[in-house]
Image (tube, rainbow, N blue to C red):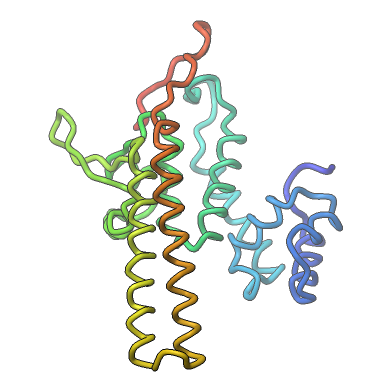
Length: 251
């Protein structure tokens, strides 16, 4: 399987495949590339309906140029904690962002979440996020506010009274429970329509089926979240003693 970055010719093949309605996996097989590479390429450059090979190629060249300018070189280049490979980490973060975007999370929110998920502390300050993502403080503030409403992030104060944004063990559990509650509200609203539209009518029957479906899925989500909650608190094995110890996330 070939490695390295996509060529302009490969991007043209991606554009042709999207125009024909081909699935990402099919395009990937044709190019002998991982499906994740094609998915990331398309989502990073406008999505399946707006992807343009020439624009995508130029955008990639610009990103590569900015990285080379920003990356420190020489003997003072800081090593990543635990001996991590910088390029592998960057590629993984891009994949994580792409997957979140495909699930419906806006790009900036996906980037912030990825930073938080991949930090060893699970928390970062606004200034640390600004430095990592190279965006304005206003963009971070807006993203955090939206993530809070989705119960995917919470705020806390550290010892220095700085505000930190946290993704702790309980965040995913609370998010699942909130999702189930939203399903319950939607089910109740659907049932209200049965009385309004008239029991026994086609529209009312459709709404009743929707309500029953949402009732079942909400109950299943809550039951599964309760049963799996302990997984979130499972202790992971400690790293080997000779492993490079982590530096603070802001470094």
